[in-house]
Amino acid sequence: MEKLKKNRALIKEILNETDGHMTAEEIYNEAKARGKRISLATVYNNLGELCESKKIRKIPTSCEGKDRYDKAYIPHGHLICERCRKIKDFFNDGIGKAIYESTGIKAESYDLNVYYVCNDCRKIEEKIEKK
Image 1: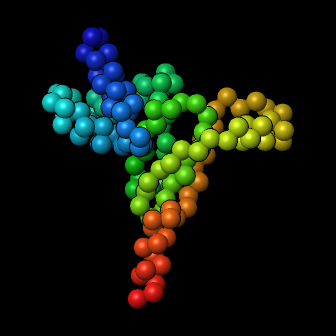
Image 2: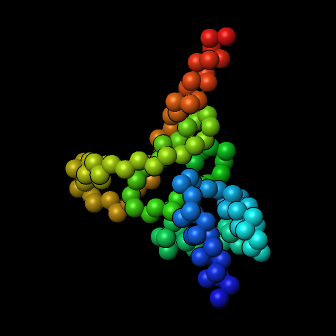
């Protein structure tokens, strides 16, 4: 039981120290880089438990076929670049309000992924088109 708590704490610590949204494999690689003995299966199992207990959020994406994990559980959406796969958080209290106004239901949480092409990728594409 103690090892289980240590593994969860390690995974949560790794997520808290990043500004991004990591895959299970990235979390596993970071744990190994820190000299921790942990298996990829253990990472996946603990991520599931952390999501279930609402300590982190799983971001299912169509990008690369890999889910990503978010340290912030509060309701917010994600902007996902279709080219480079970078994910940015966006917060908008109006979404919950719009759901309530149109349905009469107070949303406790929501998952909203918006796919777009980020400015960096758009610039690269424009350079390629000019050639």
